[in-house]
Structure formats: C-alpha cells, structure tokens
Image 1 (spheres, rainbow, N blue to C red):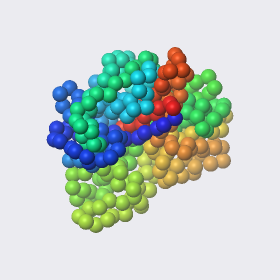
Image 2 (cartoon, helix red, strand yellow):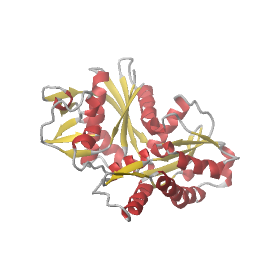
Image 3 (cartoon, helix red, strand yellow):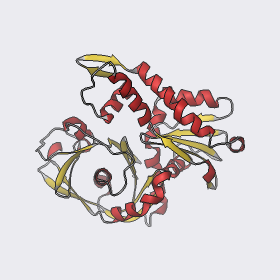
Image 4 (tube, rainbow, N blue to C red):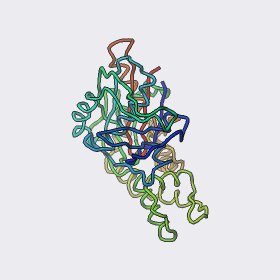
Amino acid sequence: MKTFIIPSVLEGYNSTLINVTTEKINGIKIHHEGENYVIGNLALLEGKSPHKGINSSPDDLDYNLLLKSGLFIASDYVGQNPVSITTGFPHATFNLNKEAASELISNIDTIQYDSMPFGGSGMSEASVNIERISIIPELFGSIVAAREGEMQIRGSMFVVSIGYGTLEFGLCTENGFVQRTLNSGSGLRYAIDSAMKELSNSHYLSLRTEHQFDNALKNGHITVNRQRIDLTDLRKKVLNQYYANVISPLIKNTWNDDDFNKASTMVLVGGGASYPELVDCFYDEFKGFLNIEIPDDPLTMASKGYCLHSAKKSNSTDTKSIGLDIGNAHTCVSISE
C-alpha cells in the first residue's frame, strides 16, 4: 500500500506557475468550475493566504477540491483499472454527508489540472474509472487499520482519534462500536487557537493563517521579525490545557467502569497522537489499567483503513483500491499496490 499526504489548504490562483517543483504531488493546480486553485504544498509555497475549511461537507468548495486532488494523486497508480474507493466523515456528521458524498464522487470521471508547475506543458486531464464507492465513519476506518493492518489488534479496544477539527472516541468490541461510548468534541484547533492568542499578546504574528501557525507549533519554533522564537514550552502548556479542559472531562462523562472492564487497550490515532506531550497526558491518566498503543504513523490510519475496506468490497482482481481521508489539517490518500 502506498500512502501520500498533502496539507488540506488551497487558494484561488490564476497566474502562471512554471517549473516550481519537480514532483507532481508538490505541484497540484486543479481547474474547477472555470477557476484555478493551488492545493497542498503548492498553496503553501506560492499562495499568499492559503486556507482550509473545518469539518467540510460535500457542498463546500474545499471538499470538492481536496477530493479531486486525492483522485489526481491516485490516477498515476490506478491507470485505467476500475477503482473501489472508500472515504468517510466524523461520527457527528456522517449521516448528514454520506449520500451527498457518494453522489459527488460518482459524478467524477476526469480531473482537469495544470501540469506546468511540475514541468508539464499546460492544461491536462486525469481520468479515473470509479466502480464502487463506500462511505463509512472515520473511526471505523481507523479500527479496520488497527485490526487488519500492521498492528493486528484483537479483542475489544478503546479508540481515540485526535484530529485538527474534531476529537472522536469510542469503545469497539469484536462486533462493532458500543453506541453509548461514542462521543466527540473540539480537536487540536482548540490548542492551536490558544497558542496563537497567547503569543499574539507579545508578538505581531504578521497575519499568519491557522495552518501556518500549526506547522510552526509542530516544528517547535516560529520566526517573527527575523527572530526565531522557541515554542516548545508554549506547545506543552496549550496541549496540557487541551487535555485537561476538553479530552479528559469528555471521556470521564462518557465511559463508565463497566466499559473499562471490557477492554484493556487504548489506540490513539490522528494528528494529535504525533505530539509526545499529548500522549504523555493519556499515559498519566490511564497508566496501570490501560495499554496505550500508537501506530507508527497515526495520521494515516483512517486512509489505510479505508483502503483495506475498499479492497474487501472490490469486485475483481483488476480493481484498484483507494482510501481517501479528507482531513482538516491533512488529506491522506492510500492506494493498493
């Protein structure tokens, strides 16, 4: 399985870009409804104010563009083969969006793009032959990856997905999720906003977007007025606050002692599981009665689970399987080999 990640940012851009990158994934410029948009890394490189939506629906422009970008990335690897594709939504918005998403995907057979940013000759079309579409809850995608991917976890488990826009968690048995244990709340954006507000009290952040500051917080430093400012202490502070104010109370109000009798493992997935400071909070609260498991790449668990689900639903050996996770911070594309 191949997996690709791009930032979920975009910007309208009708100017010409020629040979600004040698890699296709870093030069995504999509033509959509008469306008051109730079997506992902190209938006961060060439855009003036790249932005992203939070918990987008199929009616939103950014969802449409990121969907096309994911299929554009996959088109090189699926060729003319029929495609089985799976994507999903958080539990809170799943039922609202599943039918609209399926209809939107079913109407895509070509993606128009500008190849000049990565050395091509101009406007081109990538084709995709979508044979089967599945829309499943995002947490279920992570469960499929945890059970059938490299982790191979058996039995009941707690799953906590810490995304940029949404925190989701629940108890999953061998028969599926226990509905009562499912809940959701604010994602990492809570901590990012807190950090931006605190730093802006002492420094002018020069109209930086949320995504730009998110990257700075991940890197542990930011340059302001030609001075590099260390953000590691601030990052630890806001992540501890996020855990104490959002994650811990929500879990305490949702799971009871009987739930903890059913499972001894907790799996952390999503971008938040990449922050050691946040993971330490889980260890501190649950040490002694839960084993905390973190995959090698927690950010891509949903897309890998989607891809595995697509493979199970495919109709023939010629069918290529795709898992597409359109996240608030990153869009992940997993493709069967």
